Image (tube, rainbow, N blue to C red; front, side):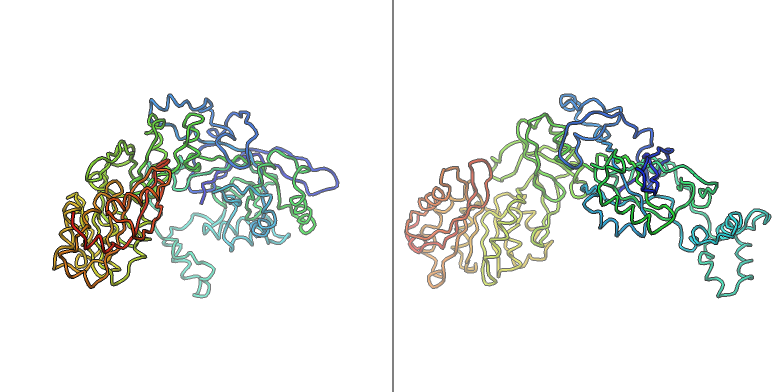
Length: 598
């Protein structure tokens, strides 16, 4: 539910259409639409500033700022402070609303759909606080007979709600009053006193000071918008504020109503300038009822910092013309940014916005400060915002992984590629993952294939891979090694104790092709592969050539010293402008496997 607290000028609309209707400004009254309110009417009273003609819908370049934030955001000051006031993103918009009975709200909303506000994350319907009461009490306010005096009605209401009326004497204690009711009425009579059991209950505990302050400031879970409305003045001598609660600010109760927020083009317009569909609703309603129940209300819609999207806030903070970073990689609770050099002076601000706009799933924001040069493929990361823990838990393809980005390598953007590779495996396959990392492919494959041999040079990655095997209860289907890739391939394929391997994965794009020469003559002394199918190899690599697939294909042929074999080439993704990551899949040629060793 959106936090809504409405202050506006309301204009009663006469229901005589023989002459043009007039608007009469009325008294300003606050309505709270939620359990918490974010600003008082004095706070929301802002100075108007001219705005340029912009596209339809909410924008930080439209509306009015709060008085204390009239000056524009200066990037240089933000750069020094590495923070900003969230209230500086508050914007106030003038809109119009149609106040209608609640029972007509649904039908009118569908009928006037094209003339409603229809802004993202803002509901077209808002409640009017304080005008709703229980159905049992409506008969005393709406359906009373004309002959019944107003005083008798109020006496009945007071006795119904409080147990006594004026002239009844001192009120009994809750316990004695309940005892009196129990002796006065029989069991059938209790139907009219459904809350009898609550009469003698202790009152709710008083809220602590900080809780009251939270309600006063409007600190809530979904505080994105706030609306202010001014209700019409009390026109009669019947004031229901004491009976309907402190939230009810109106005078004569007119029944439960709703506000239909109208299109922004309807703001500050007279009735004659309203769309014909809205005029038709008024005409139809005036013909079917004697008591006016529809009115046009001028409102102020305030949108707070939580309403605006990440790219909208960053566009306002960063200098004009600078590219807005709009995407990042997510690893568990960590957001991994790759900021450009031009973004570095504003990295703290960007991280704060990313953290604020993704609080549900992001707790830490980091930026890669250097390319991967280590043999262990670890990245140099700088923590920009949030907690300083780089240990997280990732779920991929239904498998859970513990990852420490400070000591191991992980790339969530390869999840689709890993899923594609898994779909090509069968239940009879035996997989050999030469550069397994923490096991995103090896452990996922173990759920499907017969057996997996996994290896990585990084001892920290091997430790986490073993831990993840136990976490997913797959330790019996995986053998984990901590060896150099070349030595691991020679050990696994030359051993007589290992199973016949059918799939080999070599996902080390920088250097994987350089390891292919180890397969030359590898099976010459191993007789168990002579009568079986040779393994299918999936090798990954980077290419900056004009024709990346042809370039990568040539490098594979040179590494194997073989030309006549079929290679299935696939472009995985563009890792940088002009640089592609590719995957080549092929069955190991017999002349390579049983030829002369290197």
